[in-house]
Amino acid sequence: RAQDRPRLVIDKEVTAFDFSPTGRIAFAVRHVFSDKTTRMQRDDLWIAEPDGKKHRILEGEKFVHGTLPFSYTVRALRWSPDGAKLTADLSTSEMINENGDTREGVMTLLLSDTGEAMPITGGDNTIAGGTNAVWLSDEASVVYLTTAHPADKLFRLNRVRPAAGPGVAIFQGHWFAEVAWRPKLDLGVGIERGQGMTGPPRLVALDLARETTHPLATLHGYAGGLTISPSGKKVAYWINNEQLEVREIDAPERVSRVRVGVGTLAWSGDETRVLVKRGPERRSGDLIWVEIPPLKTVEPGAAPALAEVIPQPILHDLAYRGFEISPDGKSLAVVEPGGRNIYVYPIP
Image (cartoon, rainbow, N blue to C red; front, side, top):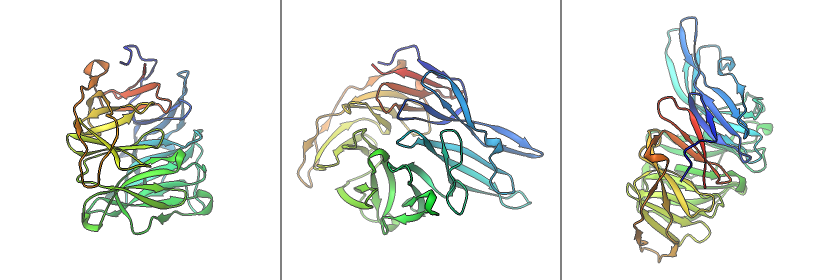
């Protein structure tokens, strides 16, 4: 049970945040301003040190993209494995003519932990249309997603080495509904689908260094929550709105299932349990610990036994908008609804 007194409070209107490998927290703060007659939002980027000191590394109002008014909201931040670089996923709104017409989109921003732009040769430090981007273990490459089939909500994978020029598609001929990363290990897992969402969802492992895939399982259903454990040995996901499945990556026939409502999850440091926020990802929900049943070998075509466990609520059953467990498994950060302040608690 997390203690009642937080060890750190970030009193800002936070839109996204992420723990670094060394316990720092990068976070985005909502910043709305007006330029003559146009109202815009460009979030600022900050870093909180483990001792609680905070400093801004990017002032959104000064970030210029093009010649016409431009707004963005930070949807996600991700640290590089060495804790020296960041990627920022942006939702953008760009004015495209003098009549005030706008175009909505997504973009990835590449920068250092001091706020220095990390430009791609031949361009600036942005990836137009890029989302869910992470730095890999070589600290020189970034993998990211771009929309492949908008009607089906499918994505293709891409890689960019900023020093070498624009990004290129990888894993040609493969389309994914969702991908999760463990960049320190150059590992990914994806939910692969055929064009037109034909056929059942397929769970595959992705070797991002060698650009090879390895099939893990054909799933009977998929409802979200794809997450890799800290060691990179297990993957978790919901197969429907009430059943969470956990599978061993190196021995995919070893599986377990537990009954818990669909939501978002984070792994404990020892990988024996997961912390679940029940409900839609971007809505507030309560947090519960769920013990992972032992993984057992399941014959092809058979279903693992469904375990019933008693969830353990934390933080007095209060609802939170977002949460994250630190890489060392010792801290829990939560974002309150409304004011969106961050509170960091120790995990016993």
